[in-house]
Length: 101
Image (cartoon, rainbow, N blue to C red; front, top):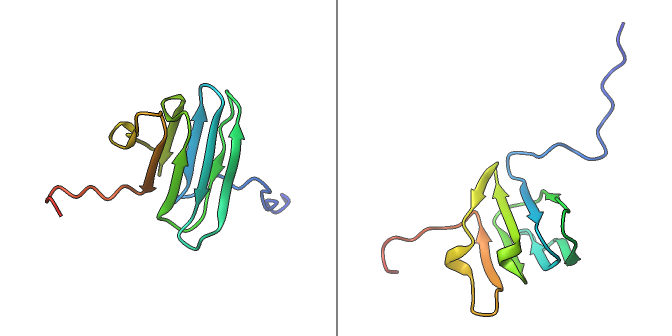
């Protein structure tokens, strides 16, 4: 008989998970819709945190061009959210409103 699978401490990325990848150090603050702080502080280059909580996520990035963001395994385009100082503030999943409201 095989042993029962152990509960994973680092749970695999769930369907609602948010995955980040850092090309250079960047300041990050991410909360879920319940207001739970999931990640805050300076994250170093090469790190790949995977977060899970209740979407939508409130995301604030410093040095946003150095960050790749994926939601449900699909890349999130940060370009529309970039400010002149390389920060980005967005909600994920992104609500794309095509009508000018």
